[in-house]
Image 1: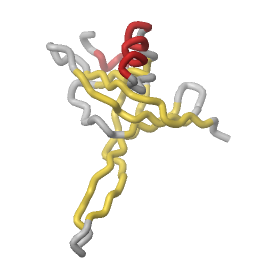
Image 2: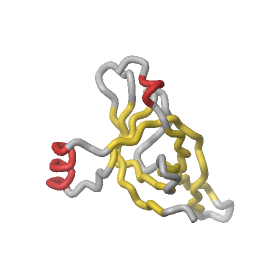
Image 3: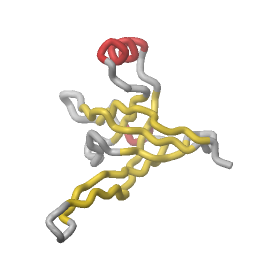
Length: 116
């Protein structure tokens, strides 16, 4: 996949949950936008779907990214599809091939809502 940039046809917001000291001896958890990434969202292959079912994974889509994209397990990717439908994906894992020409995030579609 040399030159993956031309295949990355969507922009997704990266939302990340962080825990910070609340100043009173406790912690506060917040979710904030950590950036945006260009991506290509695909359905997993039949083999990937079978493996996900057998292992109890919630892998519903593959999201292809630049190899330098700052996307981590637990992040949420937000955007809209080609029809304007809002989507949220929870990142299950991020992997790269041995030659890092792209990153692949295995994600679960957690919300899809028709825009009004």
